[in-house]
Image (cartoon, rainbow, N blue to C red; front, side, top):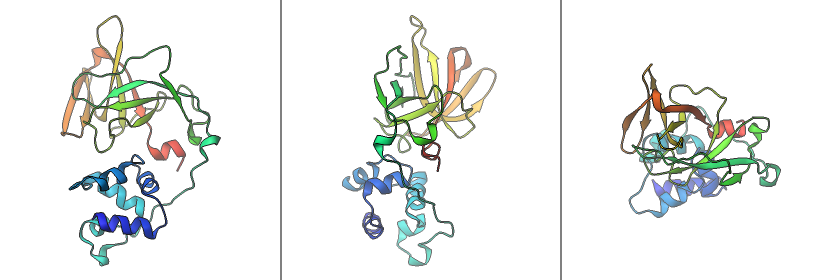
Length: 220
């Protein structure tokens, strides 16, 4: 599979970083994966790579030429120059990728500022967080930056940031997961690694905010 991936990327005249971005993954994902002995994409990640490079997941797995091309091809777009995006989105801390408590504390002073993608040029109150922990791999890896839109209602299946009170001096924590269920008493999110459902009591929840996808960030 790794040989096919390398040959495919080379034949398209793109870099591994571009191939990762087209697949909706962290830009360093493919390079890191190819450098790790025995590592290979699985499940949803494999499907994303196949779609991003315009081939079938079956071909990536087997090399069967009769299955190489999908009927539906992805539409690529040219991303804007870095300097054209204002550096005004505040990074407010980290969102825990653990199965237990969060690691995000709101502060009046952002820890950093990052570029504002074109599709968010008029959006208000956008903020960003760094992911901690491994429970959301391979969708989100430790150190990944995620953009959050507090005014865009999340749907089931969306990645969300849940801000909770930790019961200590009014401080807040946050965790990232996939919105799975809502009841009057709790909100349930899914984690990937290992697969688990985490129930968070509504009495501790302060906010539930949507994590923006790559398509939403760039208006693709």
